[in-house]
Image 1 (spheres, helix red, strand yellow):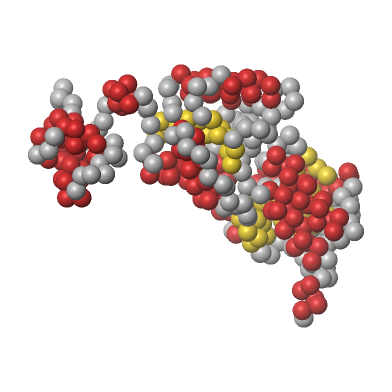
Image 2: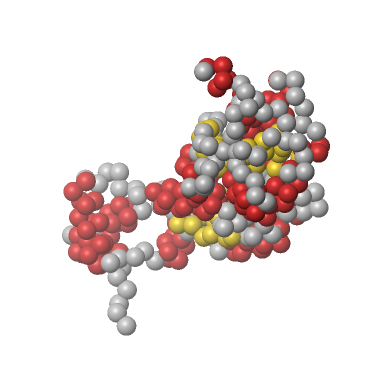
Length: 345
């Protein structure tokens, strides 16, 4: 068995002291010249030095590990979010341990306990819809209250706890404004679970824009479900029995389900039903009729979340968060009935 390369070996190879190597490799070599830093990094790479994380954590009181809990890695929004989080934490010197909890409250609680036992430095948590239900939210708060490390809610959150999220109300407002401007007044809505702040705030923004035009959203135009394909399919069947001319899906995945079921019924987007979504997943531009949607600023969301959690772990004063707005991406999924476009012509 080959001998493990130590920090002393790196120091000998670079011709510097062990203390200097330690400072540089731990990002504290502010007083070390650039040429010396480069020599140390070259020596570490040549010897294929890897730090002993267990020993370092005992000395420094940190593991440089972050627990990241998401509800569903099959949802492309969360998959992209995790990818961005991993890259940004790496730049800060942290690795992540990922827990994919399949929208399960039980798995949320188990993951929190397991990560706490791994002596991680902080937790980034996007809880399941089940955890945020009235019967489970107390258990989630209790688990968070027992943690000895900072915990930041991301995207989905519990009021009163540190969190970073998007302006979901503004996203739905913009989509509704777009539909109204194209003459749609009979609008159906496919929501996610209403205990989620994303669903509640999107519905709030949608209602606000309708109200400004003297329109209302009747209960028969609401279809609540999950952020998944099956919800979109069932919603399509439901709205085909109504007189709505357009449907706002609260996620692109739901919109894909609507497309699928409409096609099976011999109907077309947007000729028979206009459809819009939220997320701008990679497939939204590749549909037969590319989907008009709101592009979520996932990179900016990850930046803000990493910055905030690092500040919490360092005991720093929290910086004000910018309002992160989604961007309307107009494609071909909305039929023009009448409105601004006709007036311009």
